[in-house]
Each structure stands twice: as C-alpha cells, then as structure tokens.
Length: 117
Picture (cartoon, rainbow, N blue to C red):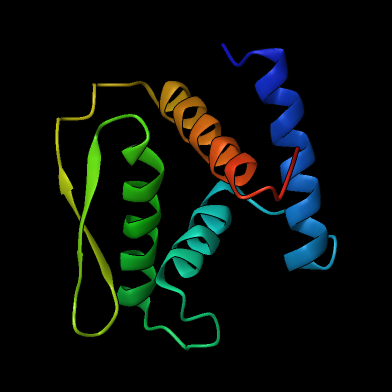
C-alpha cells in the first residue's frame, strides 16, 4: 500500500514534470524513467534509436535501484554510456509492489536533485 507521504510527493512530482516536459499533459511512469535515463547519460539533445531508448530506461532503473543496494555504478564506456553491475537479485514483487518501489525511488531521485522538496 502506498503511504500518504509518497502519494503526495508523487502527485507533486508528476504535476511538475507534466508542466515542464509535457506542456501540462499527464506524464506516465515509463516517461519519467526515460527522462532520468537521458539525465544520467547527459546527452540531452541527442536523437535515440528504439534500442537506445530501452538502454536509457535500463540506466535509469539501475541508477534508481542503486540506492536500495541492487546495483552499483561500474564505469562509463567510450561512448559516454554509464554501466552498472548487479549486486543482488531483485525480490519477486507483484506489479503493484514494483510500481510502489519505482515511485519511491523516483521521488527520492528528484528530492536529492532538489527538483522537488
């Protein structure tokens, strides 16, 4: 069950991201993960192939879950792409539990960057 503080922060975050990146249209979880991947890659004005977009989402998920001890930053390759190593297996979670974990990690990411308070 999502706690009230996470729910409140998630609402504020999605509202702000929707305004800043979607001209007020609602932003979804996958789009937020993609944005984090682009931010972590630091190639903000590049065009990405479909496979690269999936790689960006993988980078974001690794970055987000590194705070929970699942991944650790390893190195940046010659093209500037960050790589992570898996430290431990993710627990078997139901879809709703996965969503809460990701929302919590995303809120923490944006709190750390002072994008939200």
